[in-house]
Image 1 (cartoon, rainbow, N blue to C red):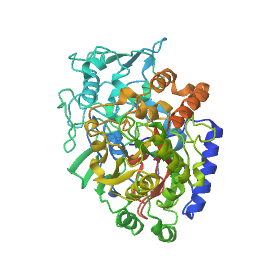
Image 2: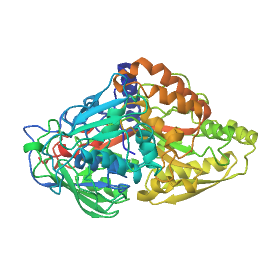
Image 3: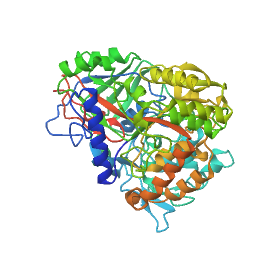
Image 4: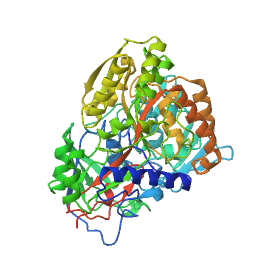
Length: 566
C-alpha cells in the first residue's frame, strides 16, 4: 500500500535520520541517504517540456480504478489523474505533507464541533472526456468507493460519514450525510463524530472525483475519466500502461494553484525480474526504477560504480511485518504470537534485502508521531531473536505441530523473506509451508475474508502523516469481505475505542497526544498482534537521460509530474 511522510517531532525525525544513516553505511553507501529528493517543487523554470520516459516496476497496480486501487503502484498514477476536493503539495520532504485545495475552491471548513465540513466545487471543471464536473459527482464518487469497495472504505468512509454505513449495507439508496448543490457547487459533509484526519481522507486518490453514472464496479483495464494533469491510457493488464499529459491542464478552470502540468509522458512497464529492472535503468534502457522495489544486493557495487549521482536511498514512514490471524489456530493464541515476535531474526531478514531494513518492534514507524521510545517487550530485535525462548513459548501455547500456511508474494526479496519465515516457524515447532501468489493478485487474495489466511507478508507505507492511518490495519471496523486490510482480523475493543478517541484530534495537533499514541502502540506490541520485521528504506534510481530535479514525495514516492528530460 502507498503511504508516507513526516509531520513528526523534530527529535523523532533526527533519530530516524541517524538510524537510517547508520543502516545505509552498512549497505555500502551509494549516493547516501536523502529523505527529501532532488528538488523541492514539482515545476521549475529550467524544466524541459516534451518527450516520454519509461518507468519499470516489479508489480502491477492492484487496479488503476481509483475506487479500488490501494497499493503504492496504484496511488502514484491515480494521484495525478484523479484529483479530489483536497490534495497534497507537489513537494519533497515534509513540505509535501501540506494539504492544499484540489477541486474545491479552498480547504473544506470544519464546524466548531468538528462534525460538519463544507466546501465549494470550482466552476468550469471538466473530466478528461469533456464532461462537466458537478458537486453531486463528489457524492457519487464516495458512494462508488463504498460499493466496490475500496479497501479503506470501512474505516475512513463508513466509519465517519453519517449514513455511509447504511448505504454500504444496502439499507439506503444514498449517503444521507452528504448534501450537494450543483447550482452553487456547495458540498456539505456530516460526520458521526469528529475525525481529525478527515481532510487527509478527502485527499485520498480513491476519492478523486469521477463522473456520476460511472459503473459501480472495479474497472481496472478501463478506468473512468478523471480530473488531473494526466490521463491513464493503453492498459495491458499486468504488463504496461501509459500516463499521458492532459493538454488542457493549466488553462482556464484547469489552472489550479499548486497542481502543476507534467513535463513528459510516462510509459510504465511491469516485470517481476527486479534484477533486470535495476540493470536496465543503470544501463539507460529504462529511465526510472520503482521506488517500492528493493535493489538486489548483488547489484549495489555495479550501481555505485556506474550510476553515481543517479542513485539515492530514501527514508519513508513504512512498516514491514508478518500478519498473524488472531481468529484462527495457531495465532488465536497469544503465546504462539509471542513466540514469533520473540524468535524472529530481523538481522537475517535484512541481509536478504541487502541491509535495507531498520530493525524495530513497534507498528508505528520511527518518523511517525506516537512511535514508542520504550524497550521492545519481547527482546531487542537488533540482537537477532531468541530461538530457545520462542520454542518454549510454542510448547506452552499448546500449538506445537499446528499446520501453518505462509502467504507470500513472488518477487524478491519478499519471497525470500517468507521463505526464511517459513523455515523459522518450522524451527520453533510449527508445521509450516509457503504458498506463493502472483504479485499483482497477492493483496486482493489475502484480502478476501473467506480465505482467512493464517500468516504472511504485509507492509504499510503511510497514506498520510497521522497514526490513525496505520491503525486502520488493526481496527475491527476495517474488516471487509473483500479488499480487507486487517489481514490478522484483529478485534480488540481497547484498540478500537482508544484509536477512535485519538483519531478525533486534528493532524496538526498530534504532538499534544503523542504519549497516548505511544501507550497504545506499546499495548499492540505486547499483544503481539503483528510481527514487525523492520522499517524499509527505498531506492531512487534514474537513467542519465533524466533531470535530477525531481520531487520524491513523502506520500507517493516518485512525483511523475516532476519528471523531465535533460
